[in-house]
Length: 94
Picture 1 (cartoon, helix red, strand yellow):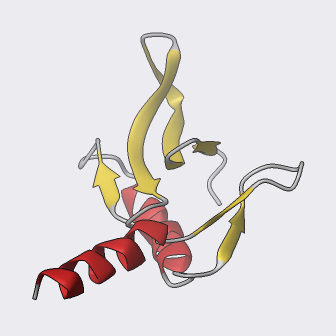
Picture 2: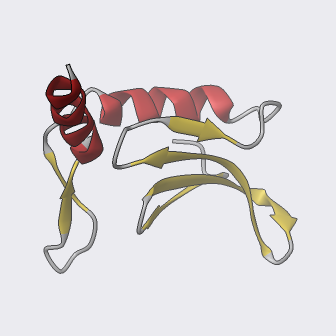
């Protein structure tokens, strides 16, 4: 992984940032991968790190339904947990 690429776990997902660019005192955001529906929201379409971000995100998206450890203290989340509930809700409507 490129040393410029910073990944961090936040409450809603995994954020990808460029360490070499600062915006308002933080690393520049490239994208975020949301835990609930595994969508990748892109903030910087022009980043030269975007392909690496997409590759990493695709690996995590492929693990839908699996447990993802978010901290060293044992906290975790089920990847794509929101997809199951939406599917159930749509089935109830039909």
